[in-house]
Image 1: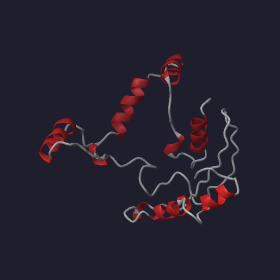
Image 2 (image 1 turned 90 degrees about the vertical axis):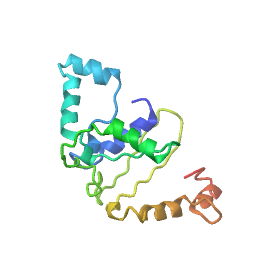
Image 3 (image 1 turned 60 degrees about the vertical axis):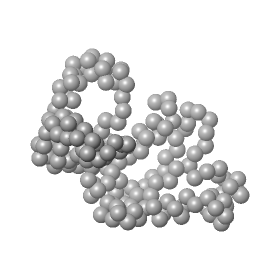
Image 4 (image 1 turned 30 degrees about the vertical axis):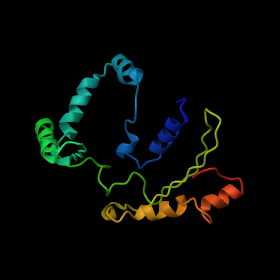
Length: 168
């Protein structure tokens, strides 16, 4: 991988809990999604149709619609375009619910990634228990607000003063 952000994402994915969906397929290109499967005798369309059959169901989907049109028009469009989505009464995939975080509380490690481009970056992840049951209260916003505040007396202002950071 020659793009730093993709390399970091790949490292992050590979350190998730064993068998978590995050460790599965991430991204691809024509070579990995066409040429390589074709060479190995794998029919990608068959795999895609199996995924559709096993994972595509109205009961586990959400839809958000934003538009300038009036509510009646938007509702009509939603019904016209999405009413045919089948309800196969599927259970959500493991890793999709709030109870199945990709990292457990014991997840920790130090990884040094040598960048392709000239840059310096320090990334911290804070694995913690799922906040999904409290999503309406947004408990992680408090932490990000405290760390991300950029005013006088903030963590960033101290790090800038010492020449250790330019942004958070």
